Image (cartoon, rainbow, N blue to C red; front, side, top):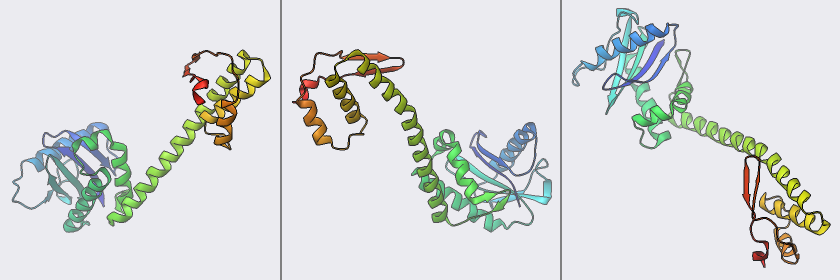
Length: 233
């Protein structure tokens, strides 16, 4: 079983920590410092696994790690896990990060920690390995990203809809003639992409004789610059 996954830089600054067993916040920080002390002092020519520190379980557990540039990737596991299997898992994790972030670096782990946790969750859940196929992991992450973008766009459209309607109503209240009211309505439909026949809508705007309307309109937190309608001709 995997007890913890730690990523820290050459100076011991943690960039990601995921514990699969309950530890207090202070104990987690002590484990990170102890693990960094054990791993960082090892020579590059020695093997990539060693006995775990006292806080993580001592000789009954192992620290399996890889060192990439400025980052250490460390998996704290119990004796039931294969050292070579975990080394391969670390390699898959790093290659997946590299593919998702296009040449991953330390800053990606700092500014996109939520995405890193999502990638890790596709691989390991509750200390058990779920997936080791990089292509399958990337496919799932891409699907999550598309869903997030779609949901964000839906929320933004929902927010902007009432503001456009309020601005349209305010403009129509300023200009009482029926002809102008229809023109303003048509104008906002064109702006919002709601017009069913853009060519006919633009033609209708061209043929209207409109009185001069304000160029800058401020309503609440909405500021809009009304274009010069005769320029459509």
